[in-house]
Image (cartoon, rainbow, N blue to C red; front, side):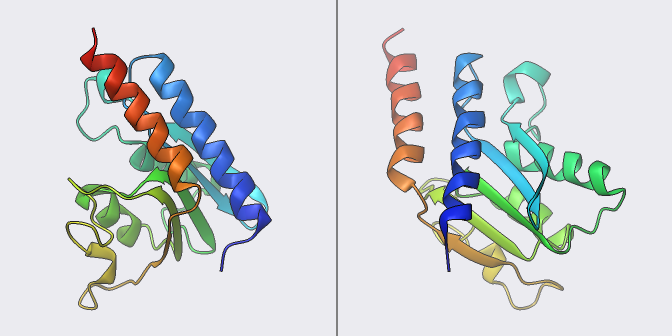
Length: 153
């Protein structure tokens, strides 16, 4: 069940996504919290780093693991503006994240129920609780505005 803290944390992810758009990156932002402590805040950097794996979620997981000194991110929650792809969903499983909250669905590459359901696969060694749709309109609008602007160039 989502609450006011979830909304505040998604707002931080939205700010990170806005920063991505400002530097020409697809506007996706992610934050990772452990209890009330912000461990990580990241946005997509595929163009900046010329790295196909530099998704907001992957960068945030790396930062959170470094902050804790442990790759197991138990007791953590990730908030991300767009439904994670298969790579990022797999990384959430591997990192042992217990809960994911995302904003907008991704009907082209979403792997949390839209196209695939990696996080719902009972054969995997870890299950992630997924809550979707938090501030979905605001998250989706960032993407629509970004791609509309890009198409008009």
